[in-house]
Length: 407
Ligand SMILES: Nc1ncnc2c1ncn2[C@@H]1O[C@H](COP(=O)(O)OP(=O)(O)OP(=O)(O)O)[C@@H](O)[C@H]1O
Ligand SMILES: [Mg+2]
Image (cartoon, rainbow, N blue to C red; front, side, top):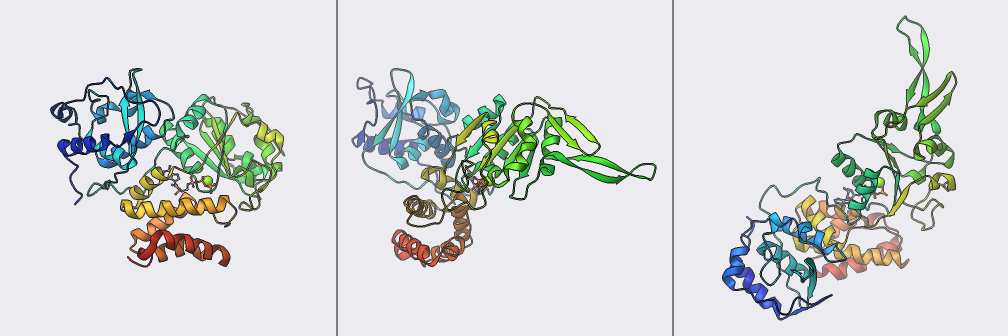
């Protein structure tokens, strides 16, 4: 059973303890605000909130770079602001204390953030049952803008490293929109036929053989007003992509085939998204082989391009815990390791990407009761070159210490 959430009195006591250690990160809290009485805080701090829900609200708050309206924090789940402007929901304060921050309402009517000088790290406990969710999805910081761009209608190209969530984010956006999504998996062998369709011999009703046109996904998406994802678009050769130039440019599709000169109508609801790892100039990193040199005219037809990256460490911890039910200690260690190994990659010390796919694979191995050594070996080390493996092991053993071989 998970521990019960702390009582309001316990949280207030902890908050009182934190106050001395708080140092303003941006603007200081209002100095003339009255210090609330314990009774007032307890009265306000009664709204029920699950620890993980609180943590997700906090992540949303942490992702904001500027002061924001209280309504953005979903006040019905948080309760009210205290008289001194600190958000007083006990579970939310617990989550904040974990990150050494607190939020307060400033005279400008917006919520501001303060960073605590010392760190308290209470365990955020997974609720006893039903919290593990293998499909759990946490909206990354760029998701809202992505969703907005899709809604507006111009095609959107997502460029970012492997396993950072581009494909899944696109699926989530279309699921939220309630719009069917066709996923075209682009490959170095993609041809115009894969994007337009093919003429095939079929049995006619009267018994003879006739030629009939079978449209490919982009043509169907255009006709039906569905979503279209060109996944790994930089894998396809430039020659195949001519087939969808007109769709990308907001027009209907023209298909020329033997016996067919067809215009595929374009439903205004059609939405197009592309994902890729490179900027379309081939592989500059050494990590993405077989990427095409894309045609400038192709790249030019995307209305908007978003550069996207990995989740923040705090967000990745939440994803690992929710998807595989790990303790915060287990998830923290995976994410600290990932952070160090990603730094090593960015400094060209190793050639191995620790993607969200890899950290999730490590998490799944730990959830299957493997030791950290076995979990990391199976998910990563065994397919690193011997030189990289040695460097990665040194990082991991430093982070795990004596727990490296313990279940
Ligand atoms: N925000 C997130 N919340 C939960 N899971 C996530 C999130 N982002 C990524 N993942 C998980 O990480 C894995 C990789 O995501 P995805 O396949 O979407 O990456 P990608 O950017 O499309 O990678 P690639 O460039 O290799 O195709 C998936 O298992 C996905 O569910
Ligand atoms: Mg993908």
